[in-house]
Amino acid sequence: MSTTSPDVTGFLAAAATPAGATTLAVFAGAIVLFVTGWLAPEVTGLLAAALLVAFKVLKPDEAVQGFGAPALITLMGLFALSAGLFRSGGVDRLRALIGSDAIRSPRRMIALLVAVVAPISGFIPNTPIVATLLPVLENWCQRRGISPSRVMLPMSFAVVLGGTLTLLGTSTNLLASDVSRQLGFGSIDLFDFTAIGIPIWLLGGLYLVAVSDRLLPDRGLQGDDLLADLTRGGYFTDVLIPEGSELVGQSLHNSRLQRRFDVDVLELHRGNQSFTAPLADLPLQAGDRLLLRCQRHDLLRLQQERTVTLAPISDKEADLDELQSGTQRLVEVLLPAGSSIGGSSVRELRFRQRYNATLLAVRRGRQVLRDLLGKVVLQAGDVLLLQAPLDALRGLQDSSDLVLLDELEKDLPTTNRKGIALLVAVLVIVLPLFKLINLMAAVLLGVVVMVATGCLRPGELQRAVRWDVILLLGSLSCFSVAMQNTGLARGLALDLLHSLQGWPAYGVLVVVFLLAQLFTETLSNGATVVLLTPIATELARGLALPPLAFIYAILFAASQSFLTPIGYQCNLMVMGPGRYRFLDMTRYGAPLTLGLTLLAPWLICRHFGL
Image (cartoon, rainbow, N blue to C red; front, top):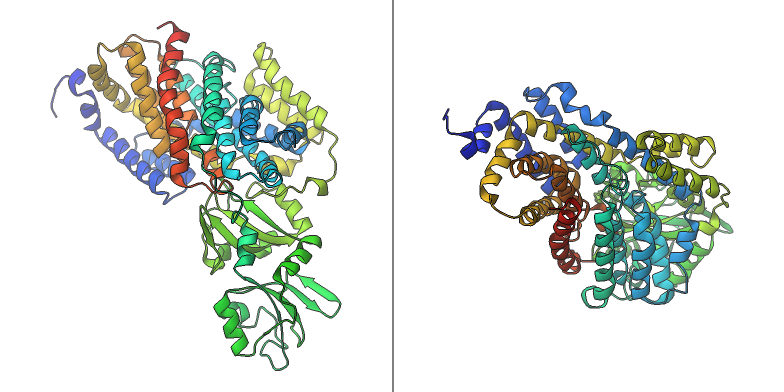
């Protein structure tokens, strides 16, 4: 092997070693899987850790040390705390404020989101905030006759901006703190970078309000309602089973009605009796009246074969109104990022049996899927139209797999523990602030108090934790350790040092910030932190600059994504309800991204006196 000075070919020398080459190969494979989505991100992280151990790049304890990190334990507790706060009614006033009729225009709503919701997201993980406010905001849009596309994206951006006000705002902040600790620079305290985050929040919020009228699309309300779209297409049909039909005497499960045709039976009426799902084993009789969801050509075929006939009353809208006014409801739900049912088909999930709900349609971006729904593979961001009993929908409100986009709060019992939940949340912040107790200990004690006082049930505690995030962040720490152990981080930093030698600190931080943003938009924020932080801190040492300044640059760049729905889960969650196209986000977010690329490094320089 060449003995060229590592100052010239530091990265190449490290990459030429067996351990370095293996690390790069695993890293390249992980990038491919992250970008293509062939494997779930958390599975990709676990695969990377396993390969680095299998090829002896890392020892087993090095590969999994991230799972025992205080930051990861703190994050698990934060998920539970936020669930207790939301489910005990601790944010009822916030929901009432957002849904208030006193807010009459999109611009005022965006200003309210920036002023109130963004600071709250500095202390609560942002995904639960978006999930909670989505139905409130949709309901407000319907009442005011305003397109959801005018306010949904600003809500997501406001939450993302607020996430960098404190250490608790995002999982990325906590991960950056843990990587900083592993690298020997110490953990980041709760309000260490708040002085940088406040100007970013204020100026970013001013941008969101100022340009919303010009850069946000107005999709309107006409055609936005998935239910209305389906009924206009005639996909709900009232039919009768005539004498002599092959269905007489058979159950739906044994008949060919749902095996050969794309048909869902939503209700069965027999005389004065009405039956709803599950209907699979109910024997059918002549004269039974069925409410079907079906395609036109399937209905024609069924009529030609005298399997069914059209019912005398053909007003589909009236049938749907009956459904809505009875115990059955038609609602839209969102499949959020990290849902355990994402990536599975409706048939594999046994969706109807699992949720006691019938899937009627799926909206994916601007596309509405109605045909062969059993074969549809559900994806994060999908909006599903469901028909289900009220009891089943109440159960969905406690599920982390689906987010109900219709408000059912009036159907729920009143909570009386919101005062306890709010007190616990305040103490979790105040006690570490005054150094009375460690942050991780405060969060864990807060979770215990939430469960002990009934703000959160043990079963809800387990469901509240985003295990996909925990698995991803815990496994990705192996890359940071491997980059350090193999010399790849130092080698790449040396190469960058030669390119940036003589640059002012501000210029170097702009380069680091821009590189981290590109990684975040194409990979994930967690991967960006663990991959780039070791390189950036080595670069800082070579330039005799504070490593913590470079850690802050990566933290802010990785925690703020405004160009694509890929980089941040909140952005993906509003794509369906807001009826956005991919480039809508880029058009609205590009000026903000450019502004932050110039502003954040300048604020960091001022903070560290560079």
